[in-house]
Length: 449
Image (cartoon, rainbow, N blue to C red):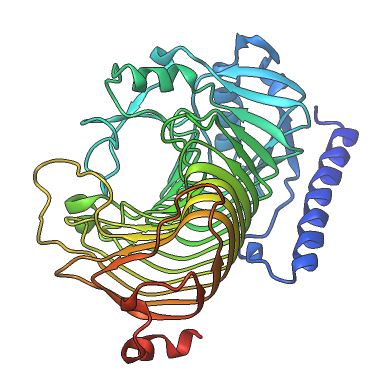
């Protein structure tokens, strides 16, 4: 697989990816993907060179691990590319390495084994203190990386399939002993690109960059059944400088949820998520389209979400936290959103989410301030908005403008509901609650309108 023709083919494929990126960015005029440039790799190997068989039956865990071991230990200048040809490659979980591209050709499917005994256990994240679902450790993600840099997962819209139904059924039957695995988790890593891949049937969260910086996720499709539990699309977690663009997501939980740790563990770890851009995302879910939280104990700041299209949603825009979380959520901007057939258009709430244990501090109150939501159009929206702060920590600087959320015909449409909140609303229909329409509070939002 090292002949000149193969190398030229791969260079052509990567060049097409670059052209597609440039065309889309030029069409819209704005992109953040330049924070991590796409790279060529002069050293190219194929999974077939290591005995990989794409018959959907043969277990290829050994082939993947040996190929990545080779990339790690040869340590080529400029890194290496692992090519996955067309076919179905059944495998157990595996770790990536630095300076590596995992490249899935058109028709390539990397499929997770359904034998749960082949999934190793790893330590809980320090900012969570335990597994998110169960005490103790957690199952390693299907594709995993820790302490890496310069990692690319890309291709020609090949598929990474978590075959999650066995895990969903364990959750439904309450037989899980440990927290389910994510489909892809990169931890303590930097300079990451995930693009032009289909992710489907994740056991738990799909793409989870945690304690990472300089991450680009674009041109991905993420799919899971609407009733698949906790199959979040993309969850940046205690990470900075993350660019999410041009994605289609249809799953059983939030499409994109920005997080930063859980109660006393997240407070102690103290790493915020900041400088997160979410742009040109389309999708559907019975949960939220664009979410912050509810695990926000390390803080979340400087989030921009724009040009979002949502269909058949539970909540369009959801900022969520709880007592015991602590943390500061601030400088959140959501704009240019279209939503159709949604239960709640906008929800900002201080009573969402569970706790890791009884040791959380009920006096650790979150602060939520300086939120701008503007240029939102919705049809068949059952309730335009619900904004409930905390009595001892009111939400401030909630600024709404140019919002029209039409009701759902033939159903009982609820009005806005608000408490313990201040801010302003300009050109918002239906008219929001008095807490956001008082002229005395409009000063908090002058710079946002």
